[in-house]
Amino acid sequence: MRKVTLFIAMSLDGYIADQQGGVDWLQGESSNKDDMISYYEFIKNIDSVIMGWTTYHQLISEISPNEWMYADLNSYIITSKQKESHDNIKFVSKSPVKLVDDLLQEEGKGIWICGGANIAQQLMNADKIDQYYISVIPILLGKGIRLFENIDINQKLTLKATKNYNGIVDLIYERRT
Image 1 (tube, helix red, strand yellow):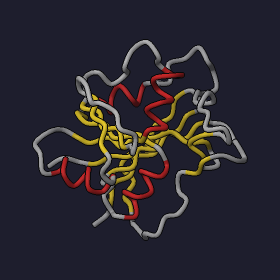
Image 2 (cartoon, one colour; image 1 turned 90 degrees about the vertical axis):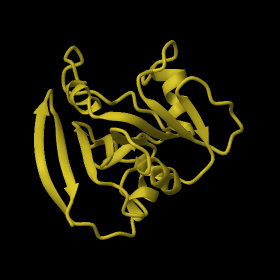
Image 3 (cartoon, helix red, strand yellow; image 1 turned 90 degrees about the horizontal axis):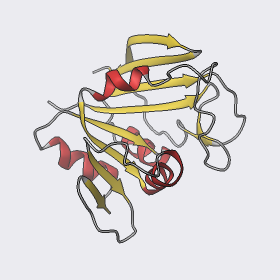
Image 4 (spheres, one colour; image 1 turned 180 degrees about the horizontal axis):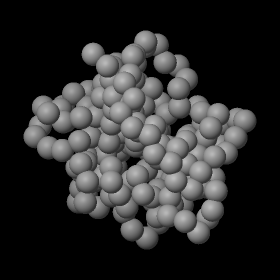
């Protein structure tokens, strides 16, 4: 059965973006070290990625403007904008919960919830997240976009693993049934 995983980075004080929506602070203590260690391991078990328009736009305009980073995945971009789907990038206007429910009916590997906060919060509130893979970045932002805001669910979790590298701490939790 497919698992739905929220794999995301946040500051030590719980923000996934700064006040302007920026993520240029997403790095460990040393800028010359590889901070993608966990991603390489995680992505092996994923074939679908879900994100909102803001995350998508940030990826194509700032983070990787010359190449779609997730070319090997089925990418689902949730947006109200009328955009034409192409290759493995699908623009959808349905709710994140409906999209996840539909994808869970299909065969495949894991489903990655990439961002943003609104999409993650809707899925958390609907109890659709099986695994939380949170990379805590060694920075305090003070203000910005919070990951765990507007959460109306009391979900018990089981700690599956922790990892640390370059000042980053990965926390991996699974939903406890």
